[in-house]
Length: 498
Image 1: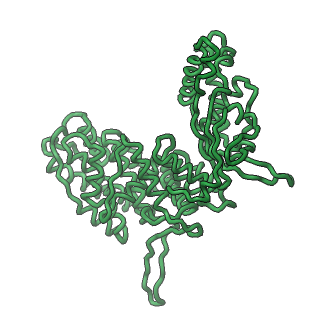
Image 2: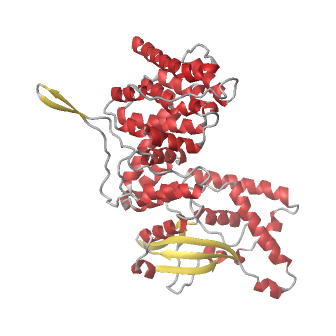
Image 3: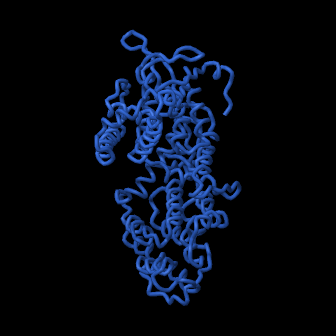
């Protein structure tokens, strides 16, 4: 990400001791003084470091200071390098409060490390303790948990209590690099540049920073809170990326789960860098059906919402897009018992033929993607029937493969069978069901007997669809015929009740 000359000239960069930063006194730099109250903006992610991360930081500090204090001469201690914590990115601004200007250093990157050090300074009763206010309840709760953890940890590790730690850890020997700019946009650009290739932040964290930076200032805090309300976004991003990448005319592979850095790069590229920069546009694309009557054409509008493959604009458009699909995912797949008039779907989705690992987690994730895409396209009215036919197609690799269904198998399956395109290119529910009913595959008899992964899955299919026990030696010829019959019987029973 290129930085223009104005951005570079507005930078202040300084190396300083943590004790000086925490004291609140001005920090000298070649570009002028750096000063202000350290502030965590409301739209920043909450403090999330848990005991594992805090313990790692504490052990690193103790290793360093143990080495320093083991030196015998004062001269050797003096020449020992400081412990380096890394860089902290600030946006420096002036706020008018009660008619007076107040300088603030808004933390853009480094909050987790800075908060953890501030927590240690408070816990160790250091002279220099920064006054930082945390508004997010989750931040307050995590800080309280970490302080309680430190109390327990020091009792287990040190006979003399934290007084021994007070003598060991010296904030005057901890160094940080401050990167400060008076432009919030530039601060975020440095933030993204620094983190896109690293592993410290998740893809969700980086796209959050990108889109909040592109959100109008007057609604920034509201959209930050909206984002935080979404919770853990990794499963949703996984579903969205699959639908957007796995398309017939521009199929793109998604890195496997053991390639987290590559996954993050693809998420940032698709849901941040490739978004258009028009701030005013918050557009949702949906299909529209026109019905001709004697009085003329009537336009039948679907429910409001977004299309999963639609182009996105930076800022509120993408945040609202992710919010819509997060809410849809929660309603459909997590709190599905609350969906009115969908008892049959709820019963099917909660059955162990879907939830049990015999079907493999990879197929379950693909099935969830297909359900989200279907409801986005056609709504909830005929969801049960669609879910049964989608199940038959999505879980066919469980029968077609001799044994294991691997993660890479899923990409090839969607590419070769155009699963998502079949849903999106169908004009209505009936056309989709017709396409799905014509889907064909060849079952493999291998490993169908017993209660292994494949055999156990078949048993659960027999249970839900009321299929008489299949001859496991004839799965290749009998399984799908029995499943199709079971699907039709389930659908007919529901229609009779209606």
